[in-house]
Image (cartoon, rainbow, N blue to C red):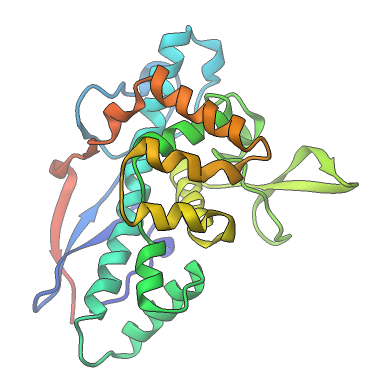
Length: 272
């Protein structure tokens, strides 16, 4: 089975359709939209979502409140679904490897790369860490961490979740504050879907979220999962309460059944 390198294919995301001979994949090509006006952002009004990646997003706080919320969700939800598709597709590849009696070099390279990326020491651990969780939780954290898209690190760096940078060689911006006399930097992303992929990987790797990952294996019930995210913020229980309030007041669980519109997928055959 061919190893897929999403970071080398920015406009064509590949997902496994079936582990047949020859292997089949579903190809997704997101539409790239440079926003000139808030009207360019499609409001989500269907459970089947068009795969759109928006660039040059507006200052949502300058819009009327309800329009601001609708446009923010309209921009972020497709990016969430694209990020989940990307991760889930590679996870299906890893699952397919467990059924193969003999791995080739590409199989081994794929497995080792993902194990390192997710800091997993076994196949079972890797598959658990590569799980994703309900859209409503991702939306709620994006809303809280970015202030409904009003934060500077969102506007300047497509960083939805305030993820820090410790690597001087990666794209990043300086935060407006320091901690213990040390300057803080935040990661900068090409688009918000990249930020969401990094968020899922952060939740997958960090020891602080091990109980969340364990609970996620057994349930997708939002009210049961959210309390396990208390260590995402120094505010702990107040943070959990804020997430729960955001989800409830904005009825975010209505988006949990949303998925990418299959009309935008194309079936292709991979070379052996």
